[in-house]
Image (cartoon, rainbow, N blue to C red; front, top):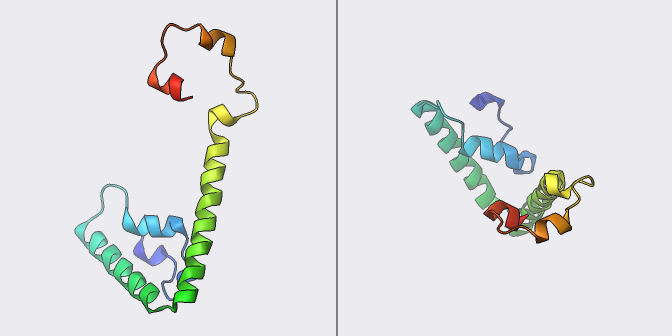
Length: 106
């Protein structure tokens, strides 16, 4: 993702969690110049957040937290063992001599 393609930092509420993550951790192959540019953008964004009134900062936090909670719930709902067709065979698994760690957790 090119630095120019990132959302504007002049409006912190426009930042999505995905955009912040993209700034903070670009996949392999990033050049030093890319990393320096991202760090400058992160520093600028942090400065803008620090300059906001506490009420506005709290509102931004609550909005981001709510979006993250929705994203996490969607991810959890999409997992295989939460699908309607993923019914456990309790008779089979209760008679198994041992379980792997993944089987025990599931």
